[in-house]
Picture (cartoon, rainbow, N blue to C red):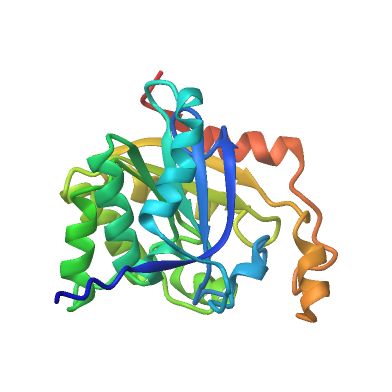
Length: 250
């Protein structure tokens, strides 16, 4: 008798109506676990991978399809985190089954686990077969500043962006504007220069830093390193948008 093992994902939360997380209306799936420790993280409660909420791909897709009538032609599912690529086996299963159901797939990632080494690289290539869009968050263009901000290098993340471009995968690039950290014209221009080397970027978004997730740090007893940092001014937001943003869909 053949024993079939069902892959289960470690789920943090679900949202049925996402309007800013990819094209159209999206069903949002937030996975648990993240290796980066971004100082401005507003989902710090996703860092710990442990959870009692384990679900299979079919269970999630059954829930998502209840809202399919709202998606329109462009909508579908967006998987975020945490860092979704830490559960790449589950992601492959989920996106493959989503495509079997004719559901558009969007991966929201920071790219931190990316490597061209095995076994990850083969799995990543398998995942791309079923991935319609990648929303890649570039935290900081300078490697040393990236390490200060997140605890990790950005070299493999930028390599991930290059590889996605080489493979013809459509991308949205997201960049969080943090006063005193990323809100620097030199860094913004270098970020734009890097983006301009990529062939498949459809859209670039500037996300102004906010403090809405600060309370989670306090609840979890984790010191919030950006305490006292105010959101960027409208003038600085518009400056960053002028340097970085474009939208090929228009």
